[in-house]
Length: 212
Image: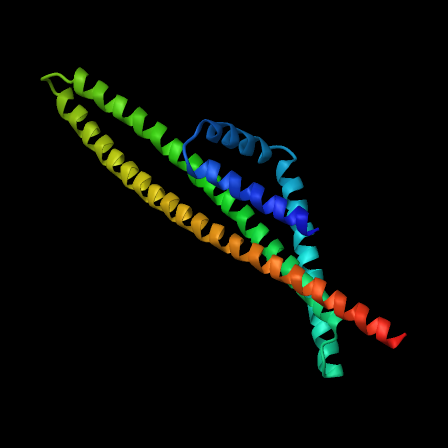
């Protein structure tokens, strides 16, 4: 379970880095995500997400039950301590995985909007050039100039939106760096929990041998 979660997390982090940086794989990833969001893709993604939420809820419930047993007994036995650490790590990884999935969805959405805004901006600029080239000195000139002014205002608005989306993309890049550091922290915590688990198992074996 833990290996599967780590594999999924690292895969999603690699996917985010591919979307953030303009590489040859970025276009293929965007096309793949477009296809996933069509047809039955959203249903499958929603099903997987709902399954993760259910498993996460189960881990949290198990942690609550262990905590209740500890309060009743007044002491945390080694077995419950190992289970508590395992459930806590699984819950943290599943929450992190869901957060990365949300980031991929939002990042893909912003990239599509930026591409659409750029295409619209190019079309408006071409129309503006055609109006400027085709203007004459008669009564239609004033109408053409008015249309050009309107188009220019639209261009400025689109450029402002592009700049806003660009700032949001930079913010996402910063969040990716933070998530990378958090992932390193999770790995260190996982190693520590493995060592604790091994130590507790050794203690249990000693206790069982002494009881015999």
